[in-house]
Image (tube, rainbow, N blue to C red; front, side):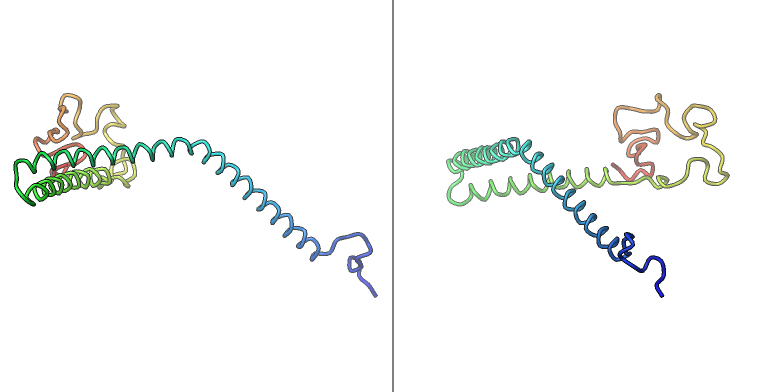
Length: 173
């Protein structure tokens, strides 16, 4: 005795055939999408290819200009300082510049990455859930600097030197 649906000759596809067809369709779709992404990537690389080559050439020219400036400074120092002192002085000057620029970059990155302590607090007063003073009155929140308190120097906020709106603790910027 056969149950309706067991005979493949009835015209109804079996579950295994449907799964195989689904796998084929999925594979074809993935191949199509990969080809589309490859085409877009090639087009983008063609667009920036000339710009990238020009940028590389500019970098090489910049390095050659720095090398030329180094050689000029070295020759000028060699006329004043005998023996290996000229390269040593120039090397120390480069090292001092690298340290100063590295420290400035470190401070800039640290300042840019600081997250205020209340950054993840929900809006409103933390203790009562009431809206901030700025929300109730339309003006600055209580204790917040207004336009008259601000100066052109970010280190001189309403709290005086060493305090800024970004650094309310006065640790320096």
